[in-house]
Image 1: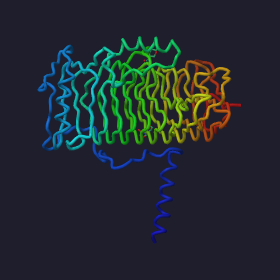
Image 2: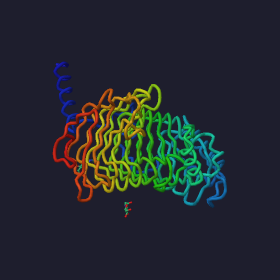
Image 3: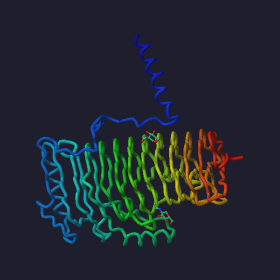
Image 4: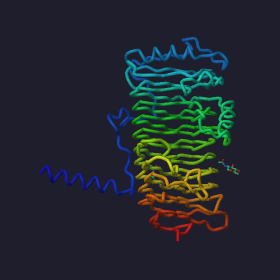
Amino acid sequence: MAIAKSVVLILLFAVVCSVDGAVKRPRIVGPDMFKNKNVAKDKLLPGEQIFNVMDFGAKANGKFDCTQAFMDAWQKVCHTTGPARLFVPEGRFLISSMYFSGPCTAQPPITIQVKGYVMATTDISEYENGDWLIFQKHNGLKIIGGGTFDGQGKQSWEYSEKCESGDDGACARNPSSLFFSDSSNVVVQGIRTANPKGFHIFVTKCTNIRLRKLKLVAPETSPNTDGIHVSHSDTVIMSRNTIATGDDCISMIQGVKNVFINRLKCGPGHGISIGSLGKYEDEDEVRGIRIQNCSLINTTNGLRVKAWPDRYPGAASDISFTNIDMENVKNPIIIDQEYECDPDCKKKPSLVKIQNVHFQNVKGTTTSPLAVDLRCSKLFGCQGVTVRDIDLKFGDAPTTARCVNTQPLFAGLLMPPPCA
Ligand SMILES: *[C@@H]1O[C@H](CO)[C@@H](O)[C@H](O)[C@H]1NC(C)=O
Ligand SMILES: *[C@@H]1O[C@H](CO)[C@@H](O)[C@H](O)[C@H]1NC(C)=O
């Protein structure tokens, strides 16, 4: 009986998993605090204490340094008992780099509600912590409220540009606006970030993190201002975000597993990127990335997997891009295992294994004729690539596809036509 039951279960599982062809819905790691809860709703919990930064000496004039006031308010929130929230009302608040560290004694999830406009100080020497607002060691955290985090990054962009041109490679990463690490059960919803010094949002070593209805904005020309950058994290759900920035809208590097991206609007920017991979020694694999119902407008790349040649081993597998609309995208579909080495790359091949990557139902316009460009490592090739129902137009001219060291399965209606 028990055996028969488990056989049925296995069969059922197989059926459920094959519906989308490739990648199943993200698996929840550990207990999911927000499971079956309406995360879109903000309701005060019974007995929830509210700590308003104004009661701790903050001044909402955009000039007074409110760092100490925010820190004092946060200490109260974190070290209380029962449910608690940090409240930032309307107004302009200037704050420097600071930690919102756990573990806390308050009852999770802790809420940070920001209605106002929070601005970063501009003196980069105040950012020894590496990032602007650092959220770490939490189990249960919600950041909500419709407010804005402005990184005031302009000065640091100039620095970053200079740094890039002097190619010693030793350039420090600019501070991210919101940095999350070593945390689980995190919801960031309905807030905005503008002009970060570095990335808008950086997620590392997190599980069960939801990033929803965010609006991330920076000039197209701002350097290295990735929208959401993720590493070493499991179960990351990003839905209904709007990102217009100077670098990748979303970038995912080593150790990222079970990601679901839904209804992203990206552009301008550099598109959605997996990689660069093979950059560091002992890289953890990337696995289970499902991206669907997204649109990309005026981006330099669309859907991209990129890896460095002649560097370290790595792996990326079970990746699907489904139902994607594109408008004026330069490189719509691209696997690039000769990152920053093309054309005529003479370096040793990439040591990154890329498997089971699916591009399906991708439609729209490109600004270059090469619409599907799959260049894989001479050592491994790319296994299990499918390209299905693609309709990409370059004005009135036909588009083309290139396949190097890979033999994708082409299916459905195809423009560009399959690789010869
Ligand atoms: C994606 O779009 C399709 C077609 O409009 C729809 O059927 C599907 O439910 C959408 N998926 C998600 C997760 O929104
Ligand atoms: C895309 O670029 C075109 C041409 O530069 C511009 O007219 C249009 O407004 C842009 N669209 C978006 C959504 O940025």
